Length: 153
Image (cartoon, rainbow, N blue to C red; front, side, top):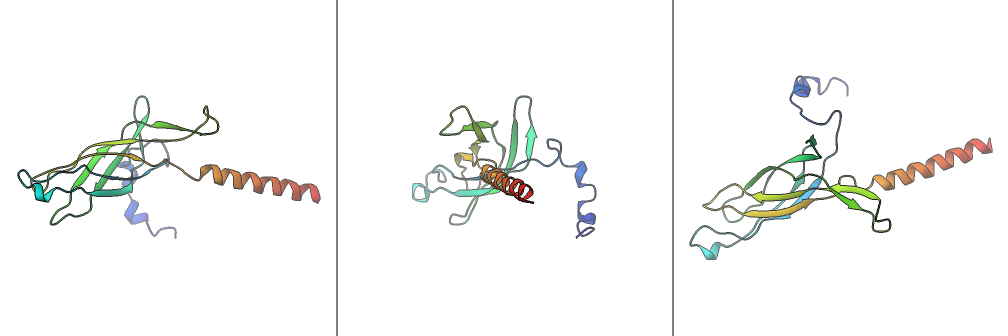
């Protein structure tokens, strides 16, 4: 596979503005609030959107992610959303209230103006790595098995 992406990726590393090295992303999904073109109540509707954020971008006190997505269609149009998330919001373990198990980000704003209207929206990302603890548990089990295998030799 080496070389396949070389031409495509040449120079791109200069354009990537992220925390050093590979960073995490978040899934997100949401719905807009109801809206319609002025004077057209019969066209009252909302839109849905979903996607994956860009990588983390460091701020002075936290980090944010770029969100760039199109909504679904209604009649003859869709809207775009281009924004940065809010800063990280910690998520705590339900059993151990002092243990942070990850974080999410808020998404609030307004869509592009299309078909004579725009929509407000409020949503949140999903947790950044929902299976990290599962993978760590699997690694721990594998390490314990490896330790047992070594002792049995």
